[in-house]
Amino acid sequence: MSEVIIHDDESFERALKRFKKKCEKAGILADLRKHRHYEKPSEKKKRKLAAAYRNARRRSFPRAPRD
Image (cartoon, rainbow, N blue to C red; front, side):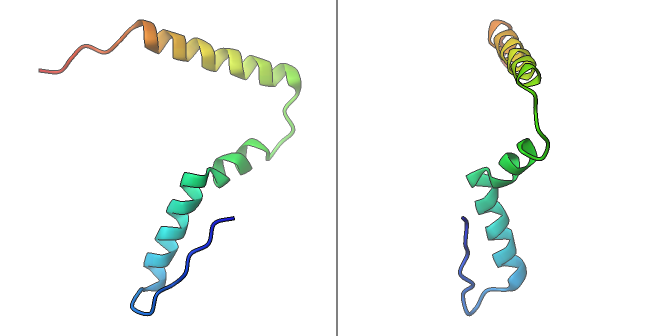
């Protein structure tokens, strides 16, 4: 669980921004979105294969260097 201690000279908006950044780094929101709905094992397998295919394609076609 992420927590942020608000300092005396800090605004609430700044503390909220730090909290959001901590949650993003911890992967809390991504995990929540992933578990929002039940995913059948066949769908999970299909999603992982598609991601592996995308990653393999990216690795096989490197970007051209910029001048």
